Length: 461
Image (cartoon, rainbow, N blue to C red):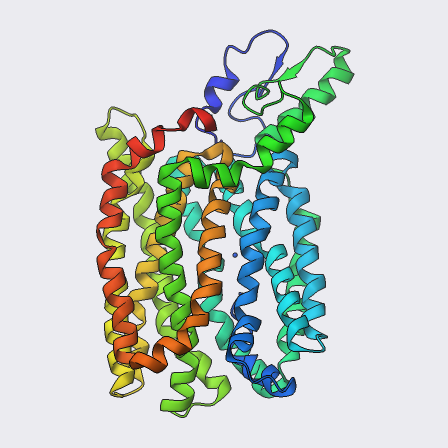
């Protein structure tokens, strides 16, 4: 069971309260598309006679505007009405607007459709964290998050590799048709096999069934008070729908973590604006093969994710034992300090190696530390938020996703101007100095996280 206080809810329930039978109750349930179009954007710009670099960049990054909007709605809906219906509807929406992208008549339409697909695609990212919270206890969440986080983090790297070859050999529109086929197939499987995991929704269903079967209309859910059902239905709805923004603005630790992740994520997309151009113009690679230049970062993602999955939960178990068996979410944070130290390395290594330029393998290897460090930061801090607010895990990840998506969508617009003014060496060094200055942040999270988390804890019980 994922909720930290599940055992309390299963034992000694007052008369008329419906809960789980025990911790073996069979009814109790113990994110590619963002960047795949990146190398194909130049083909679309040529077809549409688009000369604005900003609009051309927006055809790639507008997807992230959808990522900034979708979670604000979809995450609280999944906590109110269930993960299953929200995920099924959102992924269907995602597939339909991929068709719109494939048939887009101009740049403006393509930007709008990309934003709409981002809204639908964001459901997998944010509701997935809720599923992890639903199904796994803290001692198991690290490994679960490493599996769950593989797609959302490795996808932006794998996307350009596939998108480049597709666009070069079949045309840019086929990038989206391939997405329609792949996503449509997966959505079909999700609709058929996906099951509800939201504890509040499942208990509410059980309560309604027992009211009818036993003829006892007074029965109520053991989560009723926590779910806000003592207020009006409208009040409950408003409470739920504002949870992501309340977490962002009323939980100091969530706000600081969201800002930190957003800056790192924005730096990732700034790198994305240069990699394809560097390997096409400096090393004279073709559109298709230039996507392979992302594999250095991708390898960093994979190794960083594996290490997190193997180590994170073991650290939690050891620190919990040392703390007399009492788990605290801040026990998740020591790994983040080590991972963060790798981020600045890539900017100096990659920036000056392509500025020289050196052999093509040097900048590819130089992207490895960034991938390794970023996946560790994301996995650690997102799991920490889930540990801190397991009942509102989807909303907590939504708060982080909103800020990081806005940074990821907007910062690349400044990329061409920054690199034109400073060059790849000093342009990337500027980002390197920025991430160096942020190295104390993970230490602050660990040292003051509990104090910051508990300031408004009563608002999110």
